[in-house]
Image (cartoon, rainbow, N blue to C red):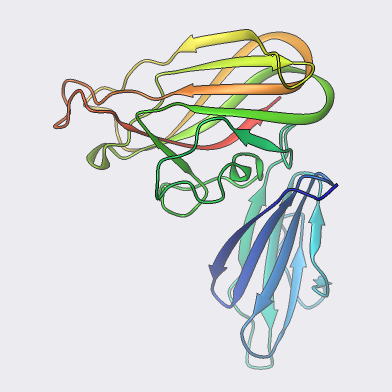
Length: 245
């Protein structure tokens, strides 16, 4: 079976980091490179890397929570430190199928970024967020084997001036065969008020523990509220990282 792979690149200082989600092996693979001469050294425990740390010689395969930090060591001096946190949950590095395509221009990798362990910042154009206008995010995640779950969480990104509003609700369904799904939880998320600030809004839904292999998460989009200049029009919904616990 071919691994389902998605790639996310991040450039910072002298280091280029490429994050690949390998769903076949359930791991995040990190490729590091730098322009010019110099060796890369890295750590995975969040400590500051030095020439005494692990020397980067092959892609780093990560299967659990880690904070990778890396530095280029040169005779003229070390580069600034690259840092990225990777968070694992039961859904991390698992296959994702989007039942509804993201809006044009905001589809990026088309789904795998929802379970890559990387958290998007307030910039919704980085490729870590998926954007939907006038339609819901509907994602089916294959956990590869039946496991007990009781919580689903995710982030939404709000930029009111760009018509990006938070989620209107969330529904969780489970399945044994990936075809027939049964709802186990649903809730309404209150619409944003005019006084609510732009930024990242964490959301979660908890439910009685249930054992399942396939999880469908439906995150409902909203319309622009009455106080908004575009009131009544479909709002954009930007979501990152579906975390299953």
